[in-house]
Image (cartoon, rainbow, N blue to C red; front, top):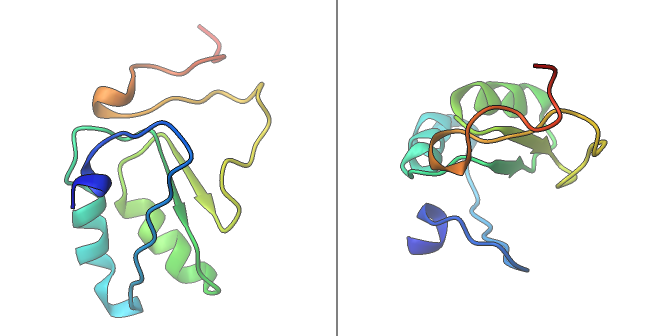
Amino acid sequence: MRIVREEIFGPVVCVQSFDDDSLDAVAKSANDTEYGLETSIWTRNLRVAHTLAHKIKVGTICVNPHNYGDPAWPFGGFKQSGWGREMARK
C-alpha cells in the first residue's frame, strides 16, 4: 500500500492488524520503504512489542502511545528520513 511506503506528514494514521505468529511478515512490510522516522506498535503483549521493535528499522518506536517523549531526547530516522540524531551529543 502506498500509505505504508511513503513518509506522510500530516494528520494521517494507517492501522494494520497483525497476529503474534506473523511478526516477521509485519516487520518485512514495515521495512519495505526508503523511510524510517517513527512507528507505533499497539498491543497488550509486551513480549510481542519488544520482539517486533527489534525487527523494525526506524529511528523511534512508540509502544501504545504515539509520539511520546521529551523534546530534549535525541531523535532521528533511518534511511531517507534523516541522518544522525537531533539534539545528540557530538
